[in-house]
Amino acid sequence: MELTNSLKKKTNSEVPADPRGVGFEPELTSRLLDSILENSSEIIFATNEKGIIQSISKAGGEILGYNPQELVGKDARELAAEPDRLDQLFQRCLEQGKLRDLELTLRHKDGIEIPCRGSISILLNEQAKTRGFVAVCSDISRWQKFDEELVRLDRLAETGRLAAGIAHEINNPLAVILEIIGWSRDLLADLKDLDPEHREELETAIEHIHKQTERCRSITRRVLAFARKAPPEKKEIDLKELLEETVTFLQPEFKYEDIQINFDFPSDPIKIISDPKKLEQVFVNLITNAIHAVKDKGSSQGRIRIKAALQDSFVEVSIEDNGIGIPYDIKKKIFDLFFTTKPAGIGTGLGLSISQNILKNLGGDIRFESEPGKGTTFTVKLPLVLK
Ligand SMILES: Nc1ncnc2c1ncn2[C@@H]1O[C@H](COP(=O)(O)OP(=O)(O)OP(=O)(O)O)[C@@H](O)[C@H]1O
Ligand SMILES: [Mg+2]
Image (tube, rainbow, N blue to C red; front, top):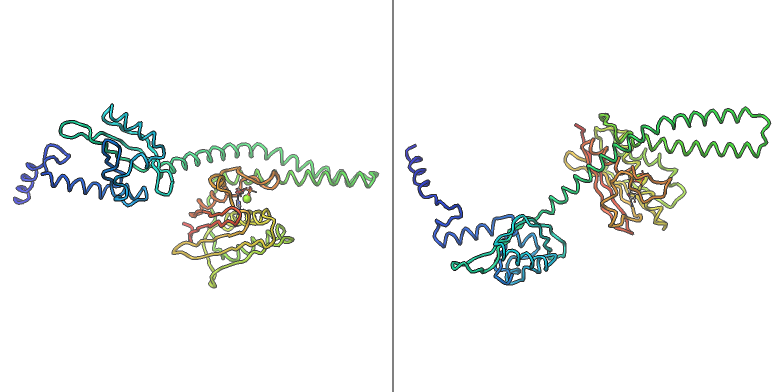
C-alpha cells in the first residue's frame, strides 16, 4: 500500500504538464514519434516545404499499397487523386497554419481512389520558419460505403412502403376483374347462336384478360408478401429434395432449351430447420434468373449448377450459371426493388429484393459474383437451425 502510494506520488510529480511529451529528452521524443508512426492506424505523413515526403506511418504505406520506404522522397501530390487540390491545400495551409476536417481523396498504388478525412498543418522549426507539412488522414471508404448502404436501405424501405400501398389498392379491383372474367365465360357458354369464329375470338380475348390479370395479381401478392412481417415457419427441410422439387416445378421454363441443371451435393443429406415456402420462393427466383441468363446468352449448352456445402453451423447453396453475366454498372442495383433489365411482361425486378428480404428474416444472407459474358454465381448462406 505504502509502496503504491509512493509510486503514485512519484509518477504524478513526473507527469509533464504538456501532454505532447516535451518533458522527454530528445531521444525519447524521437522514439515516441517512431512509435506513433509504427502503431497508428492513420495515414500520417510529413513533407518538406516543397511537399516531398520525409516520413510516413506504416499504416499509411499499407493503405496506399506501398512499403513506407518507397514513399520517402516522393512528391505527396502524386499520392492525391487530384494533385492540384493537394497543392492548393498546402498553399492555404501556409496562410492559415492549420486546416482541419478536410476531405481529400488519395490514390492507392493500383489506382483505386481512397476517400480520406483529416488535417494538414505546417511544421515550423525553432526560428518559426516553415520547414514542411504534416498531414493526418483517416481512410473513410468503409464509412462511405456504410453510409451509401444506409441510404440504399432507407430508399428500399420507402419504395417498399409505397409499393405495398399501391399493391393493396390494386388488389380489390383485380378481384372484381377476375370475378367479371368468370361471369363473362359463363355468359359466353350460354350464348347459343353465336357463330364459331366470333366465339373463338371472344374466348381468346377472355383468356388474355385472365392471364394478364393473374399476372398483376401475382405481382401485387409478391409486393404485399415483401412488406408483410409474418414470422417464419420452422420445419425440417431436406435441402436437396426442396431444390429438386423447385427444379421440377420450373421444368416448363427450360424443357425445350439446351439447358442442363446439375446438382453437386455431399452424399449425406443436408437437413435444416427453416421456412420451406419462403426458401422455395428464394430458389425459384434464383433459378429462374439463371435460366433467363443462359437463355439470353443465346448460345447452346446452357449450364446451371446447384451446389451445397456445409460450413460450421451454416450451409451455403450456390447457383452457378454460364449465362450473360451482370454488367459492372448494374451490379450495385440488382437488389433494388423494381430494378430489372428484362422486358415488360418477363421481369418486374422483385425477385432479388424479395429473396434478400426473406433471407435476412431467416438469419441468412445472399451474395454474388459475376463476370459479364461468362456467368454468375449467387450464394445463399443459411443457418442449419433457424433461431
Ligand atoms: N443469374 C443472373 N445473370 C445475369 N443477370 C442477373 C442474374 N440474376 C439477376 N440478374 C439481373 O438482376 C436483375 C434483377 O433481378 P430480379 O430477380 O430482382 O428481377 P427480375 O428477374 O428482372 O424480375 P422478377 O424476378 O421480379 O421476375 C435482372 O433483371 C437481371 O438484370
Ligand atoms: Mg428474377
